[in-house]
Amino acid sequence: TFIGYAKPIKTEEEAIEFVNKIKKKHKDATHNVWAYTVGKTMNIQRYSDDGEPSQTAGVVIYDVLKKNDLTNVLAIVTRYFGGIKLGAGGLVRAYSSSTANTLLDIKTYELTSCIRMELRFPYTYMNLVSKYLSNQTLISKSFDSFVNLIYELPKKDFEEINKNLISMTKNEIEIKITSENTKAI
Figure 1 (tube, one colour):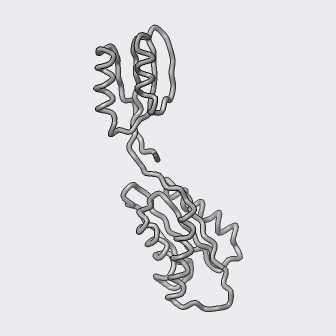
Figure 2 (cartoon, one colour; figure 1 turned 90 degrees about the vertical axis):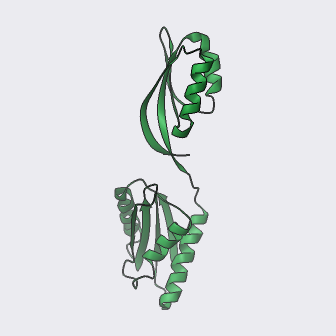
Figure 3 (tube, rainbow, N blue to C red; figure 1 turned 180 degrees about the vertical axis):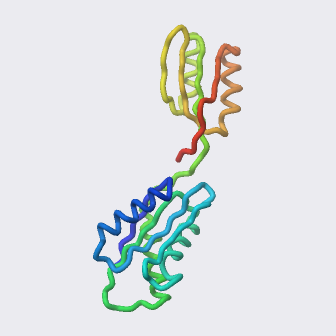
């Protein structure tokens, strides 16, 4: 019996924590084989055969992740030995298909660089600015003698948005970038 799991992760610590959770859940399993990648360019790659013959399990799961261009994800396949030896080819096929079938059920996201943009402008432009930025993520708003809004948006869109905001408010707007992060979209 092969049981597959997949989980989004941001760090190696998260991966190891989930591996340990699955090992605890399936402590009587013969093997808990896993692989994960972390980083936008898969710069961290780890896998474990967990006692299976070398090159028949962990690297097979990793190859499925790589072929699907998945990063920041952990895949684990738990195996309960049923008394029939599969051989190296059979193990490769079993781990590969178990991982591929598990991945069919996941939702994928693209990672993009995002920024937080603080805006300060006169009330006159409130409706115009709000309507223009309606497709962006509003983080907070406050009001004093001016309107103060904070949005999160893809970094690649900032230059055009900045230019358009300045134009539509006749340069009566303060725009500051306060932070940058990577986010799934």
